[in-house]
Length: 262
Image (cartoon, rainbow, N blue to C red; front, top):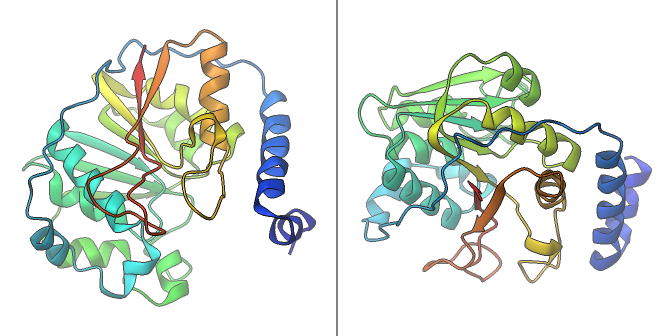
């Protein structure tokens, strides 16, 4: 265990938040300015239809033992509704983990549409996150729902985003959440968007205020976007805020937010 991780465990949450913000702000400040072209980014959040048979969708997803390790059920439901509203033909996900959101994209995509999901480790291999906790791999989850619209890539996020020659209608940034990484990911992701495309952010804490009762704040996405905005990037963030269903820690609040063109 590193000294940093030890400090984060023993400090009160408010102090741990301040420490995380200081560390990430310092790392972010060390990066040179990155050009940011947002011309293809959509300007409006879509109108979502929440009137879906979620129980049937959730049962079909069949998370089983994966349930407690994936993104919370409330966020999964939002991802499903958002995907149905946007009707993207091509989706890119950065950060597969155990496949909780990948399954939702797979179920929500229309016939002929496709998801490419990227993680720094082989999520379906013997050293992937699913194997380490003894639950189904993302590929197994996708296979069980009978969909063939997902491909898996093992790569560092920034390496993939720099080398990718495809374009996408929706990009979900849910990999490393450090400010210095997100600051690089956002401009690269903008360069891979089709006109009118959207970027979905996870763990976005507006003004670095806690969202849940545990008081924890993940500063990276907010710090990164704020630096890009201060540097003149025409960006605005639309947090989804409170949802009509539970998310986590006895609340209905989500940290998901859409990045839009100002």
